[in-house]
Each structure stands twice: as C-alpha cells, then as structure tokens.
Image 1 (cartoon, helix red, strand yellow):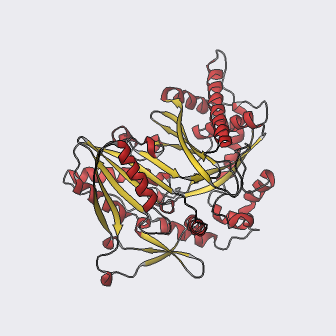
Image 2 (cartoon, rainbow, N blue to C red):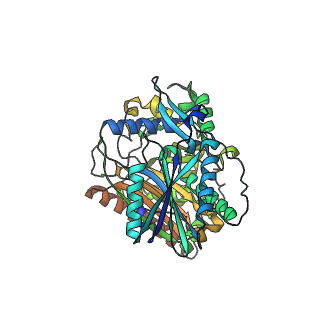
Image 3 (cartoon, rainbow, N blue to C red):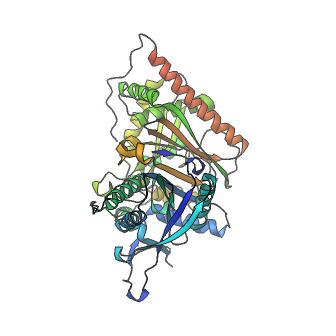
Length: 481
C-alpha cells in the first residue's frame, strides 16, 4: 500500500466503466428513510462545505484509492462486489440534510433500495488521458453538499484491471480505504470463481457517531474531561499548535496546494531504524515523531514540540472493519531542547503520548467549539498547524496480498493553508506524503523540513552503527497504543 498524488498512481490506457449510487427505482415503494444524527466530524465538515460555497471557493477535496485485479476482468463479478460493499456499510448509503435547528441529519437508504448506475465511459488511449478523466470526474462529482458522495470505476486492460474509487471525506478516513480494498478484492475473487462471499457484519459509523454524541452532548468548557486540553493551551499558547516556520502565507487565505510523496528510507534501512526504536523501548511511530521534533528544532530553534496527532477511534472491536471517519485529533507536547539526543527525545515522546492516550475519546470538534470559540466559525484551521500522522500499512487487512493488488491511497486537496505530513511504512520502505501551499516560501520551508528529517534519520543511523555505541534507555517499556 502506498499514498501518492493521483498523477503518480500509475494508470494506463484502457476501457473505463464507472458506477454511482442511484436513487430507488420506485419512489412510491421507498421505505421512509432511517434518520440518524451525523457525527461531530461530519457536522463540522458539512458546515465548512456550506461556508466554502457561500464564499464561492473553487476548491476540490476528496480521498481516493486504486488497486489491481490481475488477469481478464469479470465485469459482472466486480459490479456485484461493489454493490455488496455499498450495502454492507451504512454510511455509504446515506445523504445529509441540514435541519432548521442547525443539526445535521443522515437519511439512510435500506440495503434493498441500493442500486448502482453503470456508465460505460469507453476506451481512453493513454495513461495521461485516464488520469485526467479520473481527476475531472472526482473534482466534478464529489461534493459534500451533493449526492451521491462517491464514484467507483475500473480501467480494463488486456492482462489486468485497475479499480479506482473517490469519496468525500465526510464518509471515511484513510484506514477505511484499506478496508474497501480488502473487501472488494476478496468479494470479487469469490464471485468470479462462482462462490458466495462470506463477510462478517460491519458496525455502522452512524451508530458510532450517535453514541459519541450521547456521551459528550453535555460537555462544557469547564468539564474535567477537558483538563488535558486546557493544560495544552496554557503551554502552547493556543488550541492550534503553530508550525514554527515561515511558510509565507496569510491567515484566512487558502492557496493552491502541492502534493508530494518522497521515500525517506528503503526497506533495509527502515528495518534498521525500527530495530533502533525497539532497543530504545519504543514504537516506530514514536521514533519518527522524535525525529520530526529534532528536525524541527534544528531548522527553527524551537525547544518544545507542540503538535496535532490523528488517532484512530477503532479500539472497540465493533468498528475494526467499519467504513467511516473514525479519527480523532489529539495534541501532544514533548521537549526537544538543544543538546537532547534521540534517546532523550524519544523518552519525552513516550511520556507525552501516555498523557495523550488517556484523553483519546474526547471529540476534538467539541474541544474546538468549547475552548477556541473564536475560531469555530472558520472552515479551516486558522493558521499553519503542526501536524504529524503515521500509518504502517504492513499491519493492515490484506497486507499479505499488497504485492499483487498494488493498492494506493490518493488524497486530494486543491488548496491549503498549512503543511500536513503523513508518514507511511510499507514493504518498500518509509515514505512521506505531504500537502502544502504552492508558494515559494512554503515550498522552501517544507523542502528544508524534509531535508532536516532525512539528515536526522541519517545521523541516528550512523551513531548507532559506530563500534562500541550501546543503546541508551533500552530498558524502557514500550508505550501502549
């Protein structure tokens, strides 16, 4: 699995077919829709889309995926697999409606009402033409304020087919894309072989959102549940931790975005760094966060790391195979003072993460609303925010087949006002996908940032390779995720 811009997804010439969710054929026989409240993430995302439309903002945002089916394609089997996928996950069968009271409601179709509308797009002569078509289709058809909220398609070649899907973020997170690949691939294989696929029932993201709202609806700015966040604000100076770099952008403005993926370490070297992390008693993602903190210190002079971390909300087994936006945003603080070496910084990361994880359930959107109301009306973060994400694809569903399936996740943000970084570990190494403003100062700052991360990794690897250098702190217990 990999995360790349659409231009690097590797599409070839082929014959395209697409599917969209269609309305029920007989509206007189339609079951009254099930109504459920949207989650906090969905509500804020929808409100931002409404504001963007009011501002006449011409911006495109979606998250996509692609994967390979080797051999001659059975088109009917693929369509059946896609239909099973949509019927299985309730959030894919819903539309959103803003109520007069201000609440956002989900209207859900029953599985029986779901049908896919097939379009034979035809043959396109080059990979560039295919990529341009997918880009234009996703930009045009995936809109938070319209319906349906996703497009699915396939590029049929002589010896393989490449499936592609695009979703509005209101439906899902990055881990959901991996679930989609695994489910559709396995269902397709069974159906193409004349077998009936068997999959366990997936918990509904709408149920998750409803439970979350019931639990935190009475939260107030003085609630003890927000003690951690109040302490973070007191230390960082704001709810939103600023990137301590001059990105050359103005608060309140959006800029054309640049999407870039680079490899930081090949697989062999990444395994060496993982071993170093284990010897320090820590996990790979904490080791990378320490590296990022040290790199940021070296180019900015900051002595304390304040940043955001996206954290999965799938701890309950009910949500392990569910499609939805199961991500909360948490804040972390740890020291990166001059002279602190990797073992010391890692120890601070572990301490900071232990404090963070105790507060993992409090929805960030509620924190934003209650503790930073001056920013809550904004449709984006108020200024460039320090953001770190890490995902190890080797540990996810279907990883044993990734060499064959060649899956990719494809984030699209046509505009930005910050610099986001997603660190990715797969069978080919350690990668960084980043989306940032395409203006000279921002490009320069992010280039220096990536170079500092690479230099920090190289320095740590060289230090550990020196004869007679023993691991420090190797007796520390690993932090629990």
